[in-house]
Length: 430
Image (cartoon, rainbow, N blue to C red):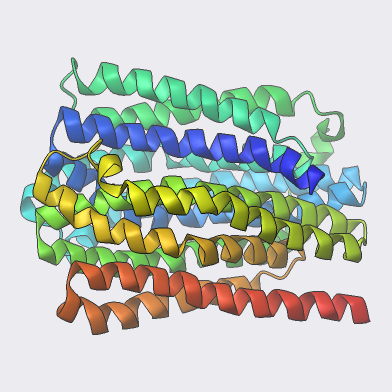
């Protein structure tokens, strides 16, 4: 538990700061430009996660083999896997960016985006997509550092980028009159600074002193890296597809509900960081110990991760139950819109516990090299959101949206808890 907490705390702080500047984006856009602008930015959320979530999930999947090679002390193999991972990130980043730029307008039209939001939605998202290759490389750099046991530098990188993002937000959005485009540009430039900072420290790692031969393209390494990375990437994108369905329902309700949903999802993203950070710690812990063939240590660590996730989510739950409107008032202006957020955050506050268990068990399975079932759990999440959404939203409106969201968390959590226990028992019997 002590080691997991020591590794977890910098990840938590780093993820918190990363989401914090996304939250500050929303505060500045909502208060500085208006609820309609916040709705336009929030409308990109599910599509953003669908596209960039694929690339970010890929970086996490690539890190599985790297952490296992580090745990086995096979540093030559680790360097080759790292070099091939960099090439994969660059290639995927460029291809996905081009395809996404071509498809974004039809996609937002398909999602029933209100016309009064379309211009700001496209303006914001175009800049985010142009910087997506930087984003995927930045996430891989932080993943690589965690794979070798360094969670401190990613923390500092995220704090640095958060401060830069807030400063640029104020400079670009308010006096420059750049509107939502200014908020997007601030985010991309902050990612550039984070990437450069991580790169400086990666060059200092002895085990990552590359030679020219490490960068020679090795198809067999690319193949097995992709076999682990793609399922994780697909899981992220498939999961976000369910969010796009919910966004479709919310968009049909009008701009006021879109603004309320945007504020709620920004807060949920912030509150999820604690459970997500535990999951990342368990992913690295499991991968390194699996590489060192320490199976009993994995089992103990995962149980400690579940306990840690439960404990840290108690105050998060209480905040959402007791003061939800105080939080959304930081982003929203209209009292009617603010009132819509109360029940949404109340329900997600209660459901934060199974979400935390989902993160831990999913990461444990991935750290063991088992990425297919976690991908299926993403499919289950989509199914739960779609089926529940179609059944409840026409009858219950905005309440049906939040029930559809948390039903996906609970269904996937049950599936992954069962799956992890099956995997770990098989390892004991091996």
